[in-house]
Image 1 (cartoon, rainbow, N blue to C red):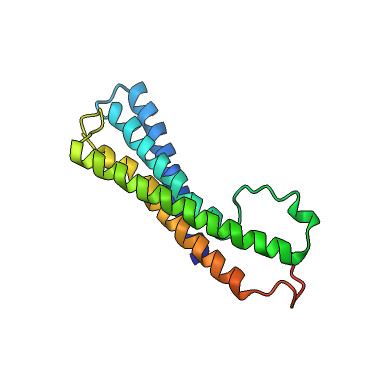
Image 2: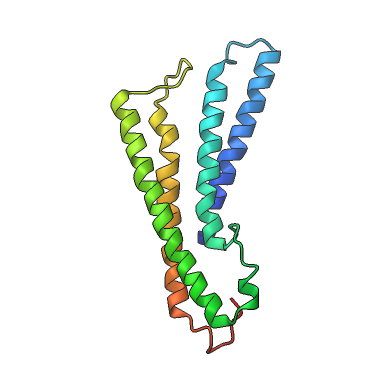
Length: 160
């Protein structure tokens, strides 16, 4: 269950965004004063956070997209080494995105960028989804790497 925490959180955020967006449609149909641009803005923030938070869950569950057609023809040791290389590459890529995403958040805070609705939500909250998600993905890739390094592909005949 702990392995799927990010996936559950992401799903809850997207579901809440959907419910909020649908309620906005109802509010507009009823001409209530609650309808407005703030619903779209908050929904977009929630969807962005939800989708990006789910990425770490995909790494943890090995649900991410990968091109392993040629690796299926290789032996277990070659596949094991390729998985180690993929985990190292994942750590490097996600850490770089987390770092540069943090720079974007700092820039948005320095310029005090805000959303268009009356809520005036800082855009940095929206942008922060990327560095947070990529930091979590880096941690998940590190966990995958540790488990790969502890596993001997030849000893138990594991078909990675």
